[in-house]
Amino acid sequence: MGERPLTLRVAVIGSGPAGSSAAETLAASGIETYLFERKLDNAKPCGGAIPLCMVSEFDLPPEIIDRRVRKMKMISPSNREVDINLVNEDEYIGMCRREVLDGFLRDRAAKLGANLINATVHKLDIPGNNTDPYTIHYIDHTDGISQGIAKTLKVDLIIGADGANSRVAKEMDAGDYNYAIAFQERIRLPEDKMAYYNDLAEMYVGDDVSTDFYAWVFPKHDHVAVGTGTMHVNKASIKQLQAGIRARASEKLAGGKIIKVEAHPIPEHPRPRRVVGRIALVGDAAGYVTKSSGEGIYFAAKSGRMCAETIVETSNSGSRIPTEGDLKIYLKRWDKRYGLTYKVLDILQSVFYRSDATREAFVEMCDDLDVQRLTFDSYLYKTVVPANPITQLKITAKTIGSLIRGNALAP
Image 1: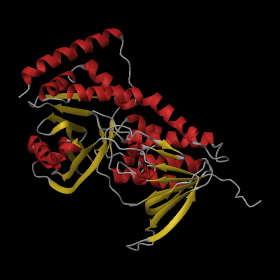
Image 2 (image 1 turned 90 degrees about the horizontal axis):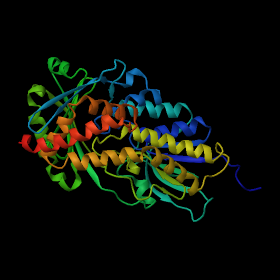
Image 3 (image 1 turned 60 degrees about the vertical axis):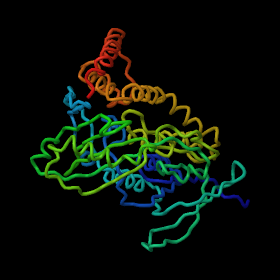
Image 4 (image 1 turned 180 degrees about the horizontal axis):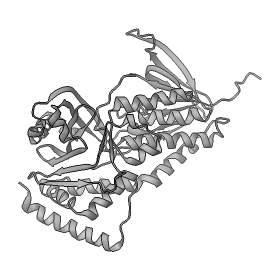
């Protein structure tokens, strides 16, 4: 008597791919789910590339995909171009606008029963034991009032899916991580120029376009996304690097009109603590962006789903409150499944992105069919695909040879 009948209450803070995927899984299992989003029309700055496996795994409809890219052009510091083409007709890289993708996932979670709250979360009251609720303090923007209305909500668990600058991570003292800055311009091109990018994406490497990563030209519905990234210690040079990619791609972008300028942080490694008490981090808030490729959309959605599945499982579909130990099962499963992927891409970045010479070697390697198949299989299906021993020896020999030649080819 006097105790509430237990129906597990979970708040998901942030409705990007990570948060919406978590909320969808929870709501579909009958758990009382609250999905917070500060800006319902948010268009996160993002290259927007998604792997083929995400389309089927997350049941994305065709209209979510702006372009089906089957050709990739890698361009070295000396402007050597390597064309990479997908061989299988049913394979492609999906190009999306985040406002479209995020809106679809968020609306689907709401239709399945998640309570969507248009609000800014600014504080958490953390209980001193394992059973009392967390209190979320937020400003509700639902009524369209500029200053909003201060409200509170009590929940049993919290999933932080609120991006690289996560408020939830700060409240739970999750620790800091190194991060990069991405800068992107959306450019609407004349029809003849846009036709060139119909099913083609470009990646440029070189100190002139990025000191740490690569620059890109990715096709969208009626424009291209042109951007670059660099570690935050070099953020003062980001506009100079953007000018570099604009210069390198100038002939292809001639006559284009900038329709939007965007910038955002990209986490560089997982936070020191991703689960504290009954709070778990997913997506960018957890630091799940890969090195080398800078990819995060699929891993965000997958981490949200895996975290929610763990909650459903360990709560017996909402009949008990999971513990910190229960939530850490999600981390063990995540690290076991994807830890190697992150390590491999970390090594690739440290080896091939450290100088223009090694970038020349990287582009040269991309001209090899064995490397292309291994790379695309790993990207499209999100596994580190082991090559047979003979192929692996060939790739190793080519890597060493490319690194040596790269020093001669670099400008």
